[in-house]
Length: 335
Image (cartoon, rainbow, N blue to C red):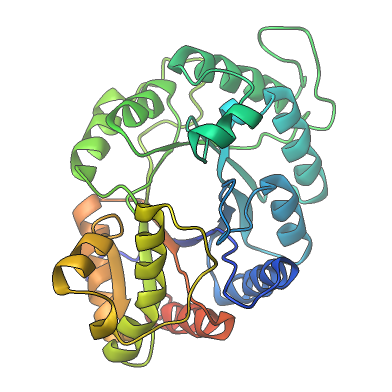
């Protein structure tokens, strides 16, 4: 049997049709409490802007809220899009959370803006080149160290001092994989929405991995891979729930802005060719009954050699999402 690697959740705080934003945030917090009890290892919040279907814009605030409402699960970012932020303020935000919830906070960092080009012009603070990214990480490691001083400038974050928050690099490209390896940091690959050539990217990360970098925090390559998951009592029900994600993909491809849509009969969701096009971006998935999803997850874990998996689950009905989490825990965390 394939080794059962740790299972994590990437939270994007989906907003369903007919649901207020505050209700979507509360549903995400209730789900955080549930997966904390079920035995998930990490709960990461993404950063997205100018998206009507997602409420994960103020990432650090959501992480702090989830940390307050959970006890054991690690909380963090998947990720903070570093070009949008001052590195010192990131260290201060995450350091503050870690002071109140020690040894439970992760900091996942990405180089993309997490939005469209027009919106990025409103929020981008720095360029996303590899050297600037590495320098910022080097400073943050200093701000999280015991002396709490930045590496490039003698400035302290104060609240980050002594927290030793582990840093991850997020990536969806070959360049991102190489940068993660060169920095000597764990790598979270975005296979859940960029499935192309994922084996090549993981191989590049592992071959580029170096402990010689001043940013290195681990002794060997460590990979987390993303996968879309929906578990329901039957394959048919899961496939119907999956149509919410398919409609979301179609909206992304056409530029249409609307909340998460109710599920529908899969046969009514366009032609077979149109459905295949919708699933192109989210082709890395485990959707079905517990037996079906168990096989798909095990195959993906073995295929990638990932040390951990991080799942993404969209449903229109928050209760169906909770059901999926419970069924997933039953099949994956069994003795």
